[in-house]
Length: 553
Image: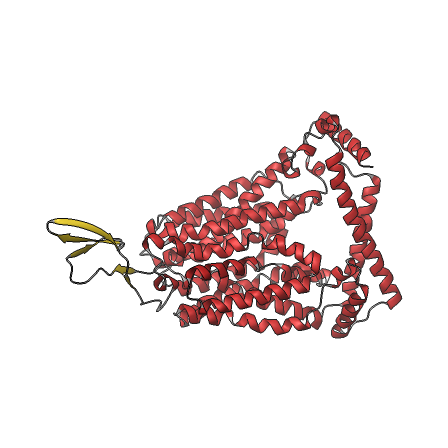
């Protein structure tokens, strides 16, 4: 479908208004005002790994032995989940109800306190995955609330709930309530703070800040392993890891609402006050107030035109039901746009595969310390350490070699390294850990790369939908990963390596079918992707697009 001249002009005006706001950010410069947002959001990101990866130390897989009733002639089963009683020449089997736990590594865990073994072993994986399940819709809900009520209020409310729930969990005595709190923590773990930080960032530093905000996660992962090494009792560990979230809250008092959002919502007086404060903190100067208000009025008007244009386009797509147009547009109007053509369908499927695999393997390697290392604390620290070079070199690597090659390389080497673990003896600890950490570094790089790749593959008209579908796929992977590592792993130790390595190779081969996007303009419409159609198909599609435009007008 082609844009009409009027639609192109409206898009150009919107781009100009966005450029004007970016120029305003450039005039404000980068100083203490911007730095406050970055420090606060980085502190929040630094503390998240302790919650996302808490299952490794809060509900770990530990050794246990059945404790049968005393003064009976019993034989305990090999898995310590049942025992047999011999009496009067008969043997009767009973399930174990009490166990003695290995306290050589952890003095107290959820596993030992709530007997998460045998037929309740799946609850260890549930403890880890339920947080990810809570995060399933958090970006969608967070994005809506942030657009409706503002960025700051969403950040403040969600961080307060996050801090209170994580800190309160160490005082809870019921497992079901703990799981409910974990779900809430996942639901309020919204990326609005990250978006707010980028919105007030000067254009020339935006890419750098986007990469640097990933580093606090890596450092937080290392810190989580270090704290758990010194604190082996789960309630104290949860309190120490969660209490710093409360310390971030006072900093939110000094953070302002996004001036970009205030302008688009017509709250110009508040926007002026925020911009004046920013200029004062950064030792910069704003344009004269009359000029500033004119600029804000222009930005607001163009934002309204963009929203009205989007509503008009959606309404037109619903009312344009002429059969000839539908045929010439190859069913685009009668099917979801992400499945409207073969090429966009291929991109959607492969991006879902890549995101699903990246999340599954990333969290699988992060949580599988018991299989990949004799020391779960050293493994977690080194695991976070491997993410630092992965995040740091991604930008220059994809700039030089492109998105496609980098993604394929990351998935392929990860797959080979993890598959090799299935055939390496557990006794060669250093080799097992080396291959596992190599896989962790490269899957982190692949994850970072596909975040850029997906934004450049999907056309503008469906980019939001494409990102949403890919995100859902990644959340499904993060929910499944704990069951692979915590439930299947103890049963068959080599199964996680086969699953994670095989999935990574599937993602690598799938990505071969995608085009390279380095140095190419971003596609605006699905039409831009249809470069290999025959002349007649292109002519029919173009004619159909023109007829649809006439119907819309």
